[in-house]
Length: 434
Image (cartoon, rainbow, N blue to C red; front, top):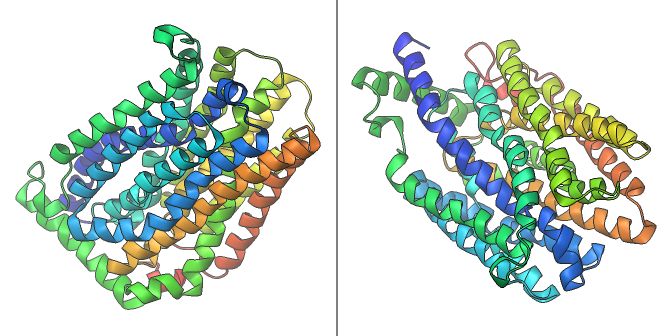
């Protein structure tokens, strides 16, 4: 890139990434705070582990069904309007989770939350391709996705503290948790309408030279990707390489949400109160945030992607298997921390793979397809953990299942990347990742 393009990228990173990180942190917290609510809600409403697991996971059914249409709408209407729409609608549903009073209402509200959130994450990934060249994307996506572990660092203690509001105003603690944690999405959605620019060409905060240089750089990359990758709707939805990426992401997400929804309850088995559980849950995610950013930067620096996805998945799988047999609290926390680090280090780099082979309408549809396939793992992971926990009375078999899912993801990643270890740059062509 020339100097003007580099300057534009730096400015875009400083302006967009902090805001998008905040939005994604709120997004992730609103979908997984049910894990903390469950510490009291399950007993209050008489939910068994299998009911809770199914309700936690059914979110992803709604998410899956509306993911691709939502991302195509983002491409048509623009990121500013569509991201704002998504955030406001999910914030309203997340707040309304306080109205849950039965098994049926739990399932319905979780499904609606998935519908409301559909398209947010792949929409942001697509949006980032409008602003950042391919050689920068593992670092940029890792910075953006670091919001998730950081959200848990803050959200764990906050969620634990909100549960302590039990009885205030005649509401239960988990009612307050849903109400208070749902409101920020509505407010941020309103801010997004004013703050986001759809493309560099519209950014008044860039100089004319920067706008022109960055737009030309991104247009040249997009042209190469259209010629050598998948730019059409049918290509993006049917090509085996895209479907395999969806399968890899499925395995990652099984581990991601399997532990995300259940970690508070795994720690609860050690006999701790909600506030201590909240602080302990934050520990693995703090380390994961640091590892994620450093690992993504290393991938960009070395221009290697495949091993930067596979190795962390192998680490996560081994750590989950170890956590199934640890006894003392500190050993359990070390194992869960390594597992969380492995999952998040893999995710940031993973998203540089589909963005290297998808362009145009194909990118909108393909990224949504990969994400929606992956997020079916968000249904499978919590559900299987819940059924296994109820059947065996412990988390041992469930943690081994999560270990196996991550190991399988690592193997598929290595098979996907045979002979294609370089990012799509002028020195490593997009077709090398096909």
